[in-house]
Length: 118
Image (cartoon, rainbow, N blue to C red; front, side):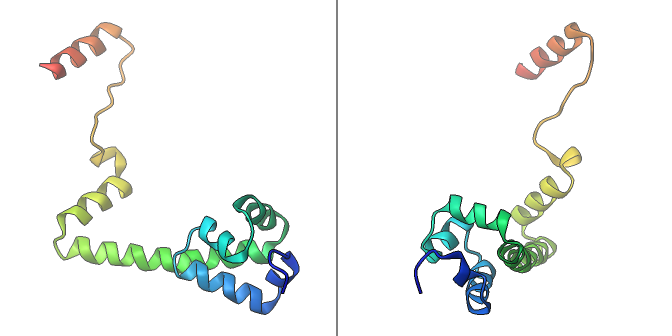
């Protein structure tokens, strides 16, 4: 097999290897390295060859779901760090660290900011 040839990666064997790396949680950069190509080549191939793109997407989704489920399980079992992370990402308007003040009156915004500094 000549390293980096897209034809190989479109075969059943090549796609299975790509799928396995994606399910193992490897990044595109790591997968490209395993394939013997650059990241930019992998991105180009993902755009040109739907088989490669879909193999990566579908199998990364599998491991993402596993991580999401583990995070939820930890949050529900009382892990406060997991709870905070979950809430900040799932409900950012209610749980983000800063409050946005929307007022067209510049004086009110300045007064609020000055009050927060004290």
